[in-house]
Image 1 (tube, protein in one colour):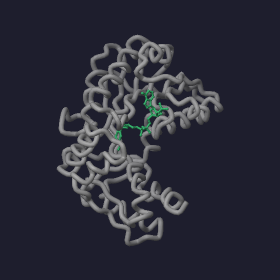
Image 2 (cartoon, rainbow, N blue to C red):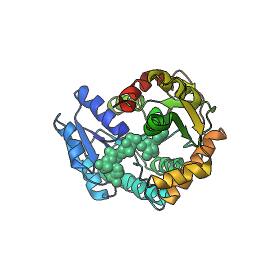
Image 3 (tube, rainbow, N blue to C red):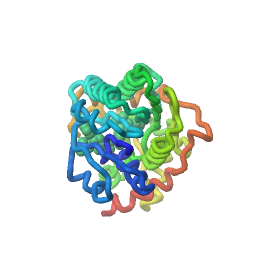
Length: 292
Ligand SMILES: NC(=O)c1ccc[n+]([C@@H]2O[C@H](COP(=O)([O-])OP(=O)(O)OC[C@H]3O[C@@H](n4cnc5c(N)ncnc54)[C@H](OP(=O)(O)O)[C@@H]3O)[C@@H](O)[C@H]2O)c1
């Protein structure tokens, strides 16, 4: 049995599908029971619990061959790092209590840095917490910026023929499709091909700038003049607040954008950490979103 936390999210849902396709036994964890039905209909078990419910979490983990562990985002948290610490500590206690021996932890590019990286700081702290557990093999997956982040621009593209964020348009970013993260996670969870505490970076098919990403999306949706605009930090912060983010999360997102703009968040690309899906393949999703 493999246990997947965040099982209905971007990454967890794709890992679950991947494992069910391979005939693996899976136990899915999330809070919304309706969204778990897609997996229980395919034979998966489900635990409709919060990751903060440590004892129930430990019960769900016990007897598992391997666990996929993640700290889900909570954009309304008044103190985001305290929220990450609360969930992260609960995961660590449940891992210890359950006796599970293999854990694949969703971390992030930039998690080697202790500070100045916004929400990634909390993932750095979670790597340290997991590294303290004795006799458990932990693989930290450090994926780069998700291609799916660009989907937040669909309304801007529809209404104003622009896309944008606080990241500079010319910064070369490694970008990854979440299906590639899920494929790597599923492989490590089934093969259990890691020991001690280790790190795997996942950097997508190539580095590209958000200016280039806009050109690629523009070609897919027959808007060749689609432009990427860098929004000011102040305007971005206001926009995030308008979307319901807490002031603390908005501040941390600006810190992360600065870290990308200043080249702080990076890793060396190798054949091993390069993954297959190109931005051109990912961008095929845009026409049906923009013209639906
Ligand atoms: N975006 C990026 O570029 C990037 C890059 C590197 C790393 N990351 C990391 O990736 C993570 C996001 O992954 P994702 O996109 O797959 O997340 P996501 O789509 O937001 O999914 C979150 C999942 O967790 C569940 N969940 C949320 N709160 C929960 C709680 N308290 N207890 C139990 N389950 C809970 C959700 O279901 P319910 O709501 O039903 O519980 C859902 O299944 C981020 O937290 C970040 O750390 C992101």
